[in-house]
Length: 113
Length: 115
Image 1 (tube, chains in turn purple, brown):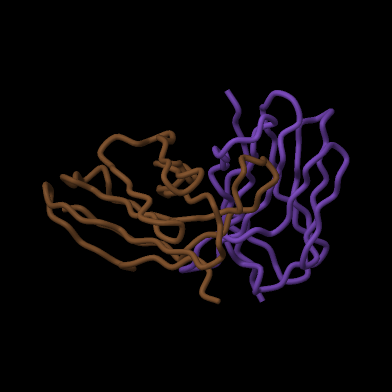
Image 2: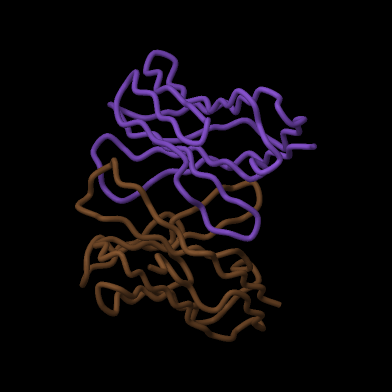
């Protein structure tokens, strides 16, 4: 079945460091791919998404490119801030649509000043 | 514009007690969802409602029931709580239509402890 695997955390970085959080998926066809972020004490909110191969999603300095050949959707940011400390979830929605989004386990990011 | 609201924020139950978690959205979305979040396991879908008047099981429906009261409200009921249901519960909504590209909008969550 469809699945999402993302790197285990926590990831600890200093402010202004480069961030990569790896995400790979298993799915048939061309699923839609998402990154959601959960700040402490809050619900998840969409960070960015990509709906077809080679699309790049971007928001708030974060980017991720839909790579069909490597079944990956890695999240990157060039210079992290303390306010980026949160849990990041990679997710996919199947090619056939429907209502069952599949979430990865989440990666906790700590950014130190 | 409140988005998705959930009540209560925190709840402690004893084994065997029942309770209902409430969820409402004001975005005129067709679809609504209930998830549970457990450490190291991401979010798992309990039940969803594709549109008003319909509900379907997700990945982990055992021990839960749901009601789509109207387009705005979607409640989750635990009839006889068990310690294994200790978790954080999130309600979410989306425009619906079964499109895989839909963004989901989440509520702030309910932290439930079953003793």
